[in-house]
Length: 295
Image 1 (spheres, rainbow, N blue to C red):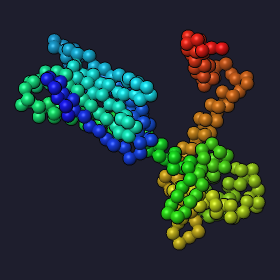
Image 2: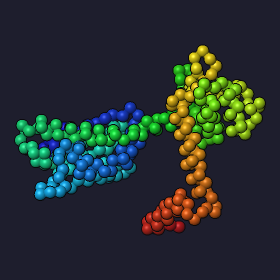
Image 3: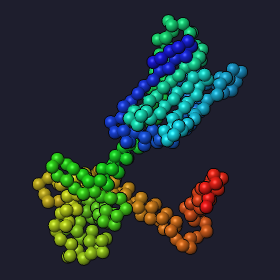
Image 4: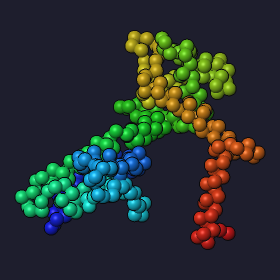
């Protein structure tokens, strides 16, 4: 906390256990909370009643701004003469700062005896902003799941290769796991092999049990399947079911058809992806010409 004359600043710094995911989290916070500057949201953060109509409307402007210095964005929320600034500090922490430039905004005097009351306002505003932001999904969780699946897994002394998103082998394996007949009572090595081989264009008789054991080990160490105790059968975990469904659907229903439309040498003129992509290219070309970068 710092204080000089009638200005006071109250800050909270949350260190991140995984700095690389901090920027992902903060940019998602910005994307999901650009409406914090609405009067009802500002009132929630500062715990003040906002009157937009009537004889005595609250005189002020309420707004949210995103500023970029270099490549590090910061979120600014304005309330009367006070503001909150939030940014990703030094790539390792989430910094939240409330600056009160006029104590009268909160019906508090300027004398030092009022500092405890001012402190309560400042730190409460910081905490309320963080509470509002916590209502959104934490993208760092999703980033961690993607990394865990698509990079090699190490469990104790055991190691398993990655399941790279987009490769035919990975998607065939995940699609085979979702065959309904395998879900109710689990599956054995040969059960999964009978469904996986055709998806890879192979004859099940030519896929060895050893190769299938390798795939089962990969799935188990990545936490997608687990062995049923006292049996040679496996079953999908909750995490494995959700991951397999999302990966296969995203690949089959979003990425593959969208890329097919973009790569089609004779695409339909009204395709939504192609139309949006053409607009993006046109804007990039205009910007390049404006900056005298065009060849």
